[in-house]
Length: 369
Image (spheres, rainbow, N blue to C red):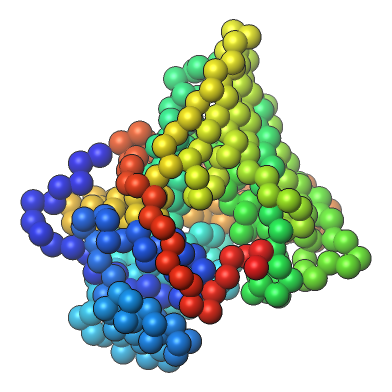
């Protein structure tokens, strides 16, 4: 997609939350976007404020001073990467202050919270984009386009495994279901199948496992089964307890497409397409997905375009994640009301920027660390 804006203006970002994903992935990639810059950091850690403030030449604010930061003319947009349970409390004031918002997924921890965020963006007339980085990743978009073109016939089945070891010391281990593997990792296969099928699920069931020695306050491994219109089925398993696996497969009446890896940002995606009994490899360049999504969002702001992975896209996943929680609690299949998504990812959203080497981290570690 075209990224020229006709001016030298850059969208100024405040990073809210100085954890691993902000430090290792978002912040180092912004400089190469050409249309974005970081001008502020909001963190509760004085050492992060000092080191990252010096590293990026930015002003740091404490969480207690966030209202003051919003009232300043220090930034135009916010990248919000706090724990999921804090999203609503920071997203709504951000939007009400007239700041555009790039909000990490899942967008909230309940449908009511998500709807409050969408309403705040609409009332303020500002841009809200949910940070589905793969919506700007060329390999993911290629997979979606191949399925849409009918290269595997009519898609009927989807299966995925997405797993990793998460430390019991990580903040995710102590905040219940909404910090667990389904919202944290399941959002990826859920979002993938919704857009590969170009449809929304109509029922959800789930089964969870919790080992006796588990450090988690929730099911450490969960399998989710989704039914879609047209007698299409999907299942995915996510886990905080196994070796890393990252793949999905969609099977149609005339072939299948396997993406492995399918969700990572640490290397290029790859796939295998089988049609007519013949298999061929698909490989994609390793791109910086965070700078790509930031460049796309800033371009939407600069040209007053609505971003595709908007609040509606966030809500489409959020309602399923909430249904999975109910299914785990009750053991019963959850029926979902009909929903039609007004937009889907398109090939023109792809942004290919080179990977950026992560800098040294300050008081932050990967989930497994």
